[in-house]
Length: 507
Image (tube, rainbow, N blue to C red):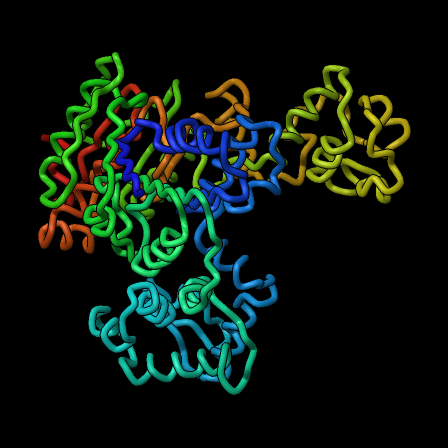
């Protein structure tokens, strides 16, 4: 029995899978007979964490199949980290070839600097992902300097390194799934659960089918309207064409009325999709159109700023730095945790408070030896890691030289001047550091699964995306649908500076 669960944005697909599926199945099924497969490691870990929280009697080892499909292949094949291709392996192959390789940005790489991001590596990987011959994938890939002879040479050399005469027996992530499909090693599960199925590739769907053949009950969840990874091999048509009982989650806990309606008006223009009836939460929401980028709105509240590509986000990031906004991008805050800890630690010392060992390490890290800290004391060698410290103790016994009345930017003299200026601007604007910045910058693709009270969308399109838009508008419609549906309260849409923009968000 296959159950197909379609979850529009904010309807809680993962919550449904855990509360309505896993919770019920656990009454009669051992946790190690339940497979929960997410598209990303982050999503798989979050599902595992929630399962352990909701079912505290279970141990983490019991949920051995809460993972990604790549991770399952790695486990089933009995591989270790040493069996996986790494940078050194790619460099060796590159040196053997004596061929200059090219990254996706068109930059020519020197000998010995190959990586999985090389354009030739990408084509080889996509051939395996799509289950097609390398030459057929090459024909779809456009111009490549060196053409088919170069691609063929690289492919043969790499295969020889992995599995041929060199017999390294090394796998990349796609190799793992290919090898999994060759062998009869799929675990026999009572319950198979697949989340974010619209993002699965051809070979991942094959893997799901192998698992489903042995499973008693199958639950596949996704949303074809949020299928925005076709460029990476995702095949949402498999979800659309899958036969089974269809369940549509019909209540969004994220989207207010105006934003939901705008999103529906956009996605209804997509030709091939599952029609869904779903309702917003009981709030009206706000949509604001901005003729140009205006960051005055960012002075308060929680924000997600979305760009179609990183190029446009780079411009926004420069503006935010000049204006003294504290933000988060690509997993990093604009001010590192270590510096924040050091600033807060110095302030605590000034106020007569105690600081712990880790905080002291960060304070000393930003002080020059022999100026802020006497030579020999900065490394805190032999200092009790469980101890706490006051300014007076440090001055007396731990080599601190900085006068107590010094401000943080005088005391932490190793901080570069440009960083001091920016941090000072942030402090003036924010008053204090939040544990997590209020503002996050992300590409639309990087925002999948995310949300914020306020969302600002840059309507700018790159040249490549603009050309794609005029060839087939549906892909861009799905991308901006995902962008629109991250907003919990207010949506701000910024008009492009150029003539390349996604015009439909203004309708």
